[in-house]
Image (cartoon, rainbow, N blue to C red; front, side, top):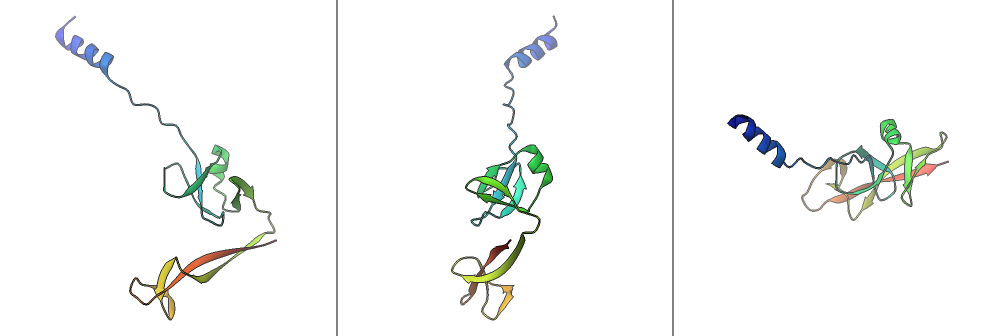
Amino acid sequence: MNENTQIFLDFWNTFKWPEPVVVQYRLYYNDDGEPVVYSMEDLPGKYIEVTEQQYSEHSYRVSVVDGQLIKKLPNTITTKKLIPCNTGTPCHLTNVAIVTTTDPNQKWNLKNYDNS
């Protein structure tokens, strides 16, 4: 056995292979249980693990209730409305379309209403 072969064999026998990554399919959701994003990444925020099929469907006609994924009925209509809040996106006092960080400002959040 020549020197190069021995160097290769020494490397091969001592190389530390990385541990395989466990794939997790996640649905991140907000405080109201509404879906925010499907991801396989470790992102900040609340999430539940979903199956590969649920992940591939990428349905936003679902809610998270008590840690469970609940499909919304086809006749369920979700209405969204901006409401003034103490937290949220700061906007100009007279125009919600202008996002600003200067004081004074009014903060707004999106509220979901399910009508079934």
